[in-house]
Amino acid sequence: MRPWTSKPIIFLIAGGLLIVLGTFLCLFSATIFHEILGKEMILSKTSKGYEVWKDSSSLPPMYLEIYFFNWTNPEELTVPGKKPILVEVGPYSFAEVRQKVNVTFHPENNTVSYFQRRSWYFDQEHSNGSLEDSITQLNAVAVSAAHKIRYWSSFFQNTVSYVLSTKANISVTKTVDELLFTGYEDTIINMGKVAVAEEVPPFDRFGWFYKRNGSIDFDGHYNMDTGAGDISNLGLLRNWNYKDTTNYFKSPCNVLEGSAGEFWPPYQTEDDIRFYSVDLCRTVTLQFARKSSFLDIPGNRYSLAEKTLGNNTKRRYPHEQAKYFEVTTTTEDFFESEHSAEVTQMPEDTEDPDVVNLGNCYCNGQCTPDGLINITSCRYGAPAFVSLPHFYKADPILRDGIVGMNPNEEDHDFYITLEPTTGIPLQVAARLQVNILLQPSQIRLFQNVPKIYFPMFWFSMKVEAPKDLASDLKYFLLLPNICFGGGIVTVILGSLIVLSVIFFLVVKKQRTNNPEPLKTETTNNAPTKKAELVYMDKVNTEDDSHVRNDRRLYPKFY
Ligand SMILES: *[C@@H]1O[C@H](CO)[C@@H](O)[C@H](O)[C@H]1NC(C)=O
Ligand SMILES: *[C@@H]1O[C@H](CO)[C@@H](O)[C@H](O)[C@H]1NC(C)=O
Ligand SMILES: *[C@@H]1O[C@H](CO)[C@@H](O)[C@H](O)[C@H]1NC(C)=O
Ligand SMILES: *[C@@H]1O[C@H](CO)[C@@H](O)[C@H](O)[C@H]1NC(C)=O
Ligand SMILES: *[C@@H]1O[C@H](CO)[C@@H](O)[C@H](O)[C@H]1NC(C)=O
Ligand SMILES: *[C@@H]1O[C@H](CO)[C@@H](O)[C@H](O)[C@H]1NC(C)=O
Image (cartoon, rainbow, N blue to C red; front, side, top):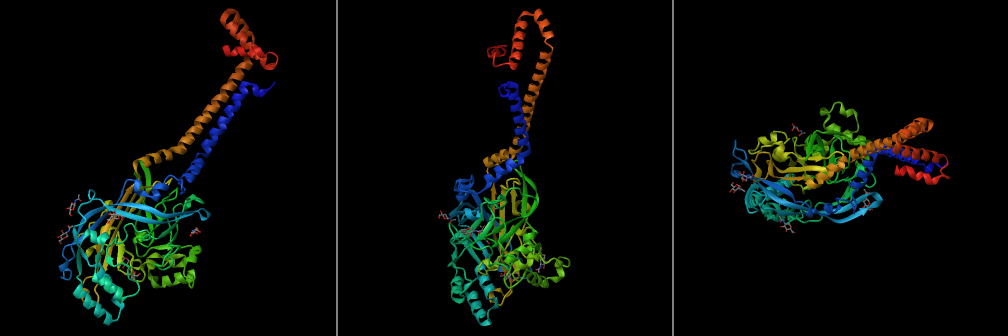
């Protein structure tokens, strides 16, 4: 007897294999999915998103929408009881194209290096106004000049004071194009070049986006993790401008942390997410706000909130990060000095040497009310402060000094909604407002002005996952379920086969043991008799199939 030539045994083995395979699929569907996910998400030259990451021009356009605050009563600035009236105009809409230049993969440390070039194209159709619209703003150049020289000797201050009061006005009226990309000439800029050697912008004109259109190096040099070593590191910014710290803030606030802002690792929880923002020169924390959904895909919404906007946010920095602190200071020394400045506010936290008040190290000296981010140190010393548009989520005191702020979540929140399993962004709304600090000074032009964080403009960049990506994503997310379901079906199929074979064998055995009823039956019915006889023949062949091979064909015809 050769069991492997016997059909029931083959079926049994096949059924058994199916059961094993099915069980395997069920048990490991999550692991299999994880493997596929890990492979799919890694950034490489062949990965799905690579081409559009390298050049976004084939994607539907992303719009940078800019809103200006048109200052309608500059002549009333020093009139007691009057507040600056700011009228929001816009949006002025620009299609943004992002390209990566000099993309170099470093497989040895699982990173990729690149420069980012951003270009903007005015889109009249999506705008409410034209580039020729004229806007009146606070004279940011004059305010910056006055701010910079506030600690100079009075001789120099008087000289500048004279120049400013003859050459400059407290407000400027320019076109949208000049204010943004073309820039405008200003005598103070040229004067500043002569007077101060260091900390002067390398620009001959002033414009909020002057020289940024199409610039390769403005955003700096990025070194980002591709996730090839560990998928949970996907998108992390490792180095920026060849370093993992910046000069803009005191340690440890100068540490690069989080994503470069484009890729997020899979398996997001409700923990905070972080990214490094070139515009803000710092790491920004987005806090879980709520569950949300986009095109029926559930997501986690993270938004900019008090951990970034507050001036008194404490955070644990583990000792292993102490390498980032200044060489001359030990971790303990560092926190010691931080604490001594603000002892009153943190009674219990002082006991933990790893807790640092981020508010302090981001203040760079003088703290601001909640809701402002001091970017003075990375804007050539201009007193620039970033907030959410209309001072949303900010200390109401900031809105008190001016007329025209109407914050609301729908239009002014800064958030990212991530699909938690894959970490793919479903919706991004990046919105920030740029403010200039106006305050009284020795300079004649600014002698009697009130202290105001003066809103200049705000922008919104809202991007949503394209529909086709969303539907692909939906199916991809079903994969573990499909895998699991397939496993169950396979197990059931295998079990059915095994059961039928067992049933078949049992029936067969019974019939071999009691051949009597068959014989009596055959006498009653002629056609059945023939068939049953054949069947019995076949049973007999099993024992000595090698001799009576010919008969085995009969059951097939039956
Ligand atoms: C800004 O305000 C001035 C008057 O203060 C007005 O002439 C100008 O048209 C306004 N600009 C826009 C774009 O509405
Ligand atoms: C366009 O701007 C004007 C004021 O500049 C405003 O009154 C109007 O509501 C805006 N229209 C849209 C569609 O936003
Ligand atoms: C930006 O530069 C591109 C080409 O370099 C040009 O076509 C476009 O008009 C510029 N955008 C603005 C807003 O100046
Ligand atoms: C990875 O290696 C490249 C090339 O040697 C280097 O430029 C980059 O800084 C390295 N990145 C990290 C995080 O070490
Ligand atoms: C903002 O930062 C600058 C430079 O980093 C610092 O001199 C200033 O005191 C800070 N705070 C305010 C309110 O200006
Ligand atoms: C921090 O913000 C709060 C709320 O805006 C404000 O009352 C407080 O004065 C600020 N702290 C400092 C040191 O400026």
